[in-house]
Image 1: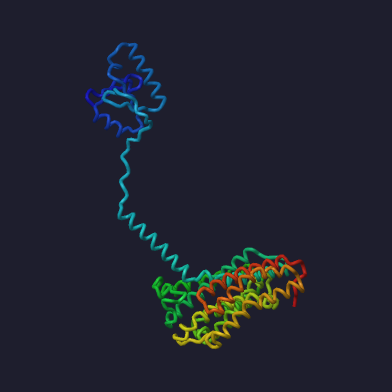
Image 2: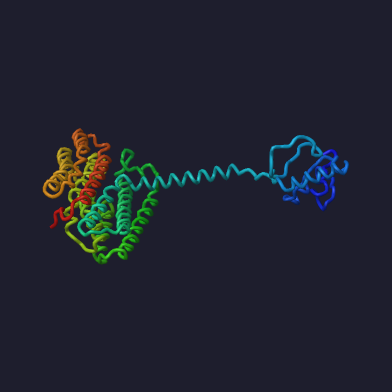
Amino acid sequence: MDEGLKCPVGGGVSGQNIVLSGEEEVLIRAARPHLVLVFFPQECSGGSLALQDSCRGMAKEQSRAETYVLAGSNGHGHQQGQTGVNHSAPPPPADPHLTSRMSRVASDVRQKCAAYVLALRPWSFSASLTPVALGSALAYKLDGSVDLVVLMVCAVTVLVVHGAGNLVNTYYDFSKGIDHKKSDDRTLVDEILAPQDVVMFGALLYSLGCLCVTLLYFLSTLRLEHLALIYFGGLSSSFLYTGGIGLKYVALGDVVILITFGPLAVMFAHAVQVGYLSVLPLVYAVPLALNTEAILHSNNTRDMDSDKQAGIVTLAILIGPTLSYVLFNLLIFVPYVLFCILATRYTISMALPLLTLPMAFPLERQFRSRCYAKIPQKTTKLNLLMGLFYVFGIILAPPRSLPLL
């Protein structure tokens, strides 16, 4: 600034006029950031008494109001439209290399999580969740109550054991050379995950299942030996399906699925609710178990050629394409026959699953034409909807209308 800036009496420091050069103004602002400096032209200090009184009044008004920045040397010029100007230094720019590295790490984490979810085959989880819902619905309808906390813990228990079984299947199918580039599950074939990652994830899920069943022991009144019998029976089945002796590879996989994802899961969900074992859930589980087995059978029929090349034996390979078609139709349509019997003889609410019948006929036509590509996924969707309508039919049934043994 050419002539310096002056702070008049009443608005200045210690009631004195101060002449500031440009450098001094910067130093004062740096040392006293909250100090309000009100600048006026030099005429305020050297003019008449009336002019100085006017300047003091202006200083008092501006000290009570906001501070305005006046452009130009010695305060000459027009007012800027800015108030409360921040004179602190701007923050340093972010390091582009650090930002790029953090973005890569976040992207890797997202891809890893997506790979783990893909390895679990979540599209198949309806086969484990609908039996839990069915067993809980039976407990509610026949015994009059259901514990939602027990229901949630039971669902998580069955779900994590199912997911762990899928990981075991992925690992052993890859180890035996069954999975290839055209397989439905290419988690290890495409190196999305390493084999040790699948093993560790499976062990983690089995451990989580054990923690959940321990929690069920404290939440439910079911005896420990009964709880352990059902749980470890299901856990062993999920592992032995492809692990250990590999029941899937000796044409016994269908039996394991028919028992585990039907009667066993329904009985487990019912027992932890009511506190005792009953044969009744086994009977009610038959329609759902048959439809769930249709998922596995369609999957094995689709993979007949690759399974033969790998040297394993499935039920679809033993009976051939024609009888596989007949078996698939039985697994799909027999549940609807049972629902018709229940609806006509006991309660009309059991006719609700018949609403999914139009979805079954396209599956039959596709299986007959031997276009197996998407049949397992479509059968899973049918299984989910039919199971939900089955559960709703039981819940909506009038009291004492359901058949008892």
